[in-house]
Amino acid sequence: MRYTTLAHESSHEISILNSRFIASGREVVSVDEAEAFLKQIRSQWPDASHHCYAFRVAGPPVVDRFSDDGEPSGTAGKPILTVLEHKVYNAIVVVTRYFGGTKLGTGGLVKAYTQATQALLETAGLIEKEPCQSLVLHYPYHLSGNVAYQLAQMGITASLDYAEAITCQIDVPISLLEPLRERLSHPELKWQNPA
Image (cartoon, rainbow, N blue to C red; front, side, top):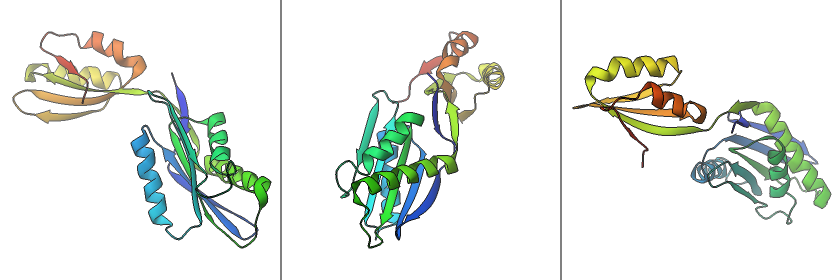
């Protein structure tokens, strides 16, 4: 399954009635990555009134999570998630708000968080991707030329470790897994999913 996500880590700021809404976002492939990005944004803007967010991770398992972070229920995190649901997977958006002294009301907040998220998506751009499977290959040195050739032919980059045998770490698009296994079918070549 191909999916659309943010092309670049980015941020975009809008101002509504003296409140600053700073939307930040990036591609994430796990809940841990999303939580790390949220922590990074909170430390970048420690004195902000709110850090509302939503993220979607394609999984497995699929995870959708959002938070209003003190804003009235349903006025911040859910609008951010709604924008993501219409456009992207494997992404997090955090909208940091500096309160400007004028209350926006629930409708105004929903509109502000929606606009900030949409502006961020335009700034970051969108890209279509295919999920990858991480694999580790172990093989003797005399197979190195063939393995390198086959990986290059399929556009797969590798991280190599040389010891008694070669250990090769790769990320393979799901659609290329079976073709790669067929090309690299050899009794001395061992396949392993990393822990």
